[in-house]
Image 1 (tube, rainbow, N blue to C red):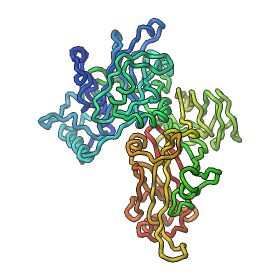
Image 2 (image 1 turned 180 degrees about the vertical axis):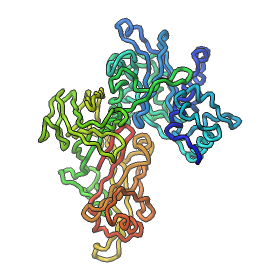
Image 3 (image 1 turned 45 degrees about the vertical axis):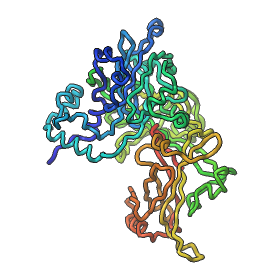
Length: 538
């Protein structure tokens, strides 16, 4: 049987490959392109930290940690202790583009792979060069012609000699932007002199306009994304599990990796009702051949009402010796507990700042990770602490966008297209398709989201539409592309289901045949995941 290296393993090879030139090469280089590279191996970020004042106050910065809020990937790059200089490489290659390890003559540069990735080298030790080359080429063929999308990264300036949140010293920010999302083709960003602020954002000598130009982002897109990307700061703690070790892989100037990356996703599942200005909810069953704004008399009368959030950490089972039987949360600020009530608040209500909210837990074998969630009316800002299985996890600097103000907030609206049988009685109308549109909230109201905004914001292939029939006993779904508007033809769409209910396969067959009556439709829900770890239900 052919031996293929896993895509995730190959991804780890490419993303840290050739992260920097040697110090002697950097010192000799004066040209911007030479310092940053040519962009083929990633997006370079360079700078010089002004550490004098910090060192006098007993504060140091040993590493710059880059964290991708979409995937959770973390890479740490050392700071020169003498000069304060740093150089890091943010991956912009597609996750299946591994051709960088193929020499010009078509052979594999195995020595380079093994030098830069000693741990990975062990895992591929039983593969021949030919087998590894075949896997790399196959991945390249599958992704030919695809252009990787921008993806947001936070940058934290940390002291790895500390423990837990004490490692955090300062972070990157540029006006409202808390992340950088470099576009492939841009080679890098020269920050110049970086002045850290303990507990806050660092200042750079490079202007905001030059930063946007370097990452390939327009001012309008930066304004939109900057209004919502502060939620990414929940990952700014470089030691979430408090074990005194960076949660990231450390990549030195030669590209050699040490340490182990550990990811601690903390997702927010946010629920909304689409309503008329007066408060009447627009049900999906009322969207027959109409968008919600058509139902309420125009966009000016459209209201999207926030109803609560599920705080969902997804923790790898290997982190724990055994499955937790209980877990508990506490928060820096008071909050209202919703449906997932806890021992201390069996009927829900207000959880005071710093008080614990304890839950019993039974492992669900259907999930690959432990989901130790907490339902709240509104996620508070500040520090979140989770105690589970004898371990304590701390997410600091948690911020969530103000959905009531909603600047930059994107919603997904749908309408259900039916086939008119040409009779006055519409009872024989059948479901034929789904039209959709993404709208962005501005201070002036709802406007169409642009394609570039959707590519930057929405994760994966796009949104998802859940469709329920026969009093919600049968459930199927279809993908919603991340284009500003469009229509999905049910006859040709890929219809998904995880239901084993009797009749669901027949339902899918009949949907594609155009014979499912609209009267069988009972409810629906549109949703999308963004690249900041948020899920939105409408």
